[in-house]
Image (cartoon, rainbow, N blue to C red; front, side, top):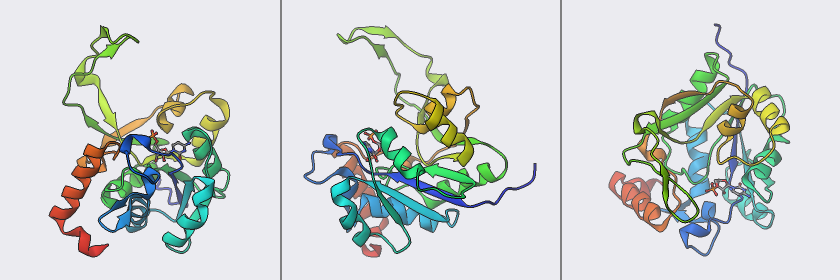
Length: 230
Ligand code: C5P
């Protein structure tokens, strides 16, 4: 298969309120070593050298704040009620891209090399690519009362990260034809019956969701000395 090096757009949905983090500002605007999570996520995408355009999706009332705090050239649009609405808003301004990445702002410490690896797989001919890691905990399914209903085989489970990469045609089709929300974009593509390929993710691409995650992120940054580089 020949290499396809068409334009790559990255969507960064950051329009959630992020209440689980317990901070006073929306999650993407929480500071991590002098730079917001959103800024770190955007900088990582640009540093990968694999992304041509970044589109950030934020709450409507924070559009001006986001524009002022992001590098020139980054496109900022208003998000929607659910994550899927925000991704749709981002997709609506994508024009002429061959590939689209969707990357959570909450994965602020994602190594640029992981972003480049996702894009390389797309350029090699894959149509849907997601980074994953094996899970170390045993995972149970439970009912509404908390009683265990099953124990999926751990060796078959993977924890899913971002960026998730797609051909623009496939992601547009998923958002047009699949009803309902999904916690990740690949979930919609799977429901179309399309094959999603996995690549090995990175521990640093973990999602900063809880106060514990935020503490971990700050400790990691302190250790690497990145605070000075902010
Ligand atoms: O809620 P969750 O942590 O799964 O959200 C994942 C990402 O989607 C976050 O970066 C969040 O800001 C974003 N999101 C969004 N619009 C919403 C809800 C969530 O862009 N309405």
